[in-house]
Every structure is written in C-alpha cells, then in structure tokens.
Amino acid sequence: MNRVVVDSSVILAVIHQEAGFETMTPDLLARSIVSTVNLAEVQGKLVGWGWKPDEAWEDATGTVREVVPFEIDHAKAAGSLIAQTRALGLSLGDRACLALGLAMKVPVYTADRAWKSLKLGLRIHVIR
View 1 (cartoon, rainbow, N blue to C red):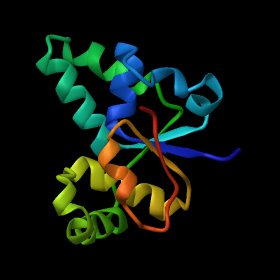
View 2 (cartoon, rainbow, N blue to C red; view 1 turned 45 degrees about the horizontal axis):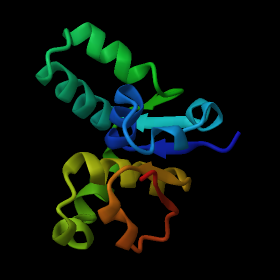
View 3 (cartoon, rainbow, N blue to C red; view 1 turned 180 degrees about the vertical axis):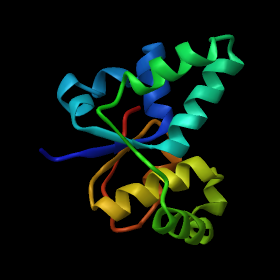
C-alpha cells in the first residue's frame, strides 16, 4: 500500500467539505498518514470553532488511517526547512507535515497553494 501524508488543511477541507475535498478519494484517505503535530493543529482549530475537545479529536483522527508521532528526526527536519519555507509563511505544522513526507519518502497532500513553489525533492499535491 502506497501511503500519503496529509496536511492539516486537507483534514479540515474533508471535515468541512470545502473546495478540493473531493480530491481526497476513499482510496487516498485509506492510505493517509498524519503527524501528531498536524492533528493537534486540527483539533485546536475545531475546538476554537466550538467543537467539544473529544469530538474534535474524533473528527480529526476519523479522516486518516494512521497517526505518526512527531519524532526527533522529524523535529530536526522541520526546523531545517525554515530557510526554504519562511518566505511562503509556512507554519511549524506545515513543516512537520513536509518533514514526515520527506522521512517516509511519500507524497504530501495540502490545500495550501503556496506549497506549489517548494522544491524539496518531494511530490506535493495541492487539492485546490
């Protein structure tokens, strides 16, 4: 099974059925993995919008197949990506997602169009 990494923006698009969510087919979602950093980001957004914390967590984790802990190597890679991503305004969560994709050597899915210009030796799919 070829896995794919999803960014927080993709999870939120799927939950809210926003533009581009249909790109995330059941097959892609069945192969999706996400960093714990990105799940914290999604849960925080949902709670901020009025979800109860447990419901927000359930909705966030219910869209993906696998959750991957943010490890030391991911942290180092995410920190190292700041020079290449600062001008685009990418957050720590964005860099955590990219770091996971690089570590696992799998494509990354995002709803953030700014990622199109990144040249990281990683396949990046923008869903809208």
